[in-house]
Image (cartoon, rainbow, N blue to C red):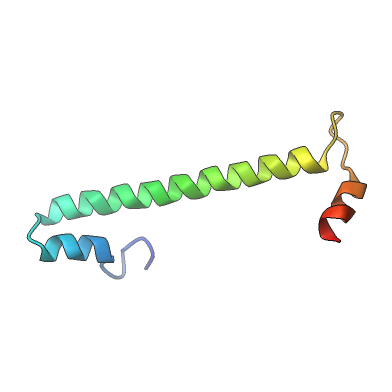
Length: 73
């Protein structure tokens, strides 16, 4: 909850408020930033799982243990 700004005011939002911007505009920017962080994390996770599945499974969807051993060693 602290990361989402529920417990503490994030730096970007606080800076905009101190600079004289309307609080609702600062909140809108903070929500946009949180959505971008969430989307980036989601896309990164999907990419990592997809690349791992392509590397560790063959065309018939069988786990290739020999490829797993090469990756660890």
